Length: 262
Image 1 (cartoon, rainbow, N blue to C red):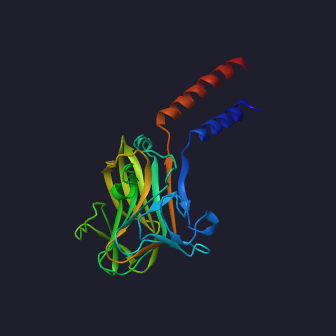
Image 2 (tube, one colour):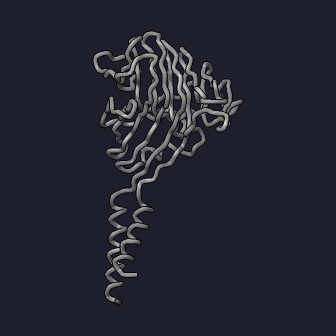
Image 3 (tube, rainbow, N blue to C red):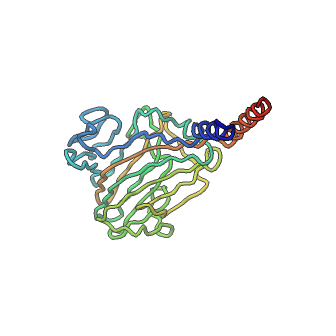
């Protein structure tokens, strides 16, 4: 093998090992094949404990498509439970790394100023569902007809919200993406049907709970009910640039030595 070909092969192999890697923490469409069945969601009860929810949240049609029902009152759920992802890992992500929390096949029914939030939380060991609150994420509201995106402060800010182009009763896909831009600082993007709708820079996670586990957070409260066909939670870790610099520095020295010997 020629030296140039060997050099390319080694660089490609080692660079691939240091490239961005996506880790899936939770990904399901709530079907029977994934271990789900019609009924309530609780702490390792009838349905898998990778998702825990307050009373009012339930699953239906698991034999076919699977639907998570959020009811129409105050309800929240945490998912990616026991995945091993921690608050410390979130805060240690290198610049360019991303976290994605996504809900597929979302439908929000009519019922006034419905609030639908999706994002990231850490848990409260003392009162997991009662006290756990979203550290940061996205927030959808409606006026009974249109669905709007806004910041995640849970209040309805009619001046700052942005029309998503989706109407109440229409099914859509919703992703909240966190991109690390500096140490413990993120850009939070709300994406509807693949289109960027709302973006906030310079955001930091408010990990105010007692636990250290990081989980996906879904909450539906006020107004009409919300249903979801699938939920996912993942992160993509991008290595620091100096790792690549070290890699190519070592390779450069190695090939210099090789060329001397040839």
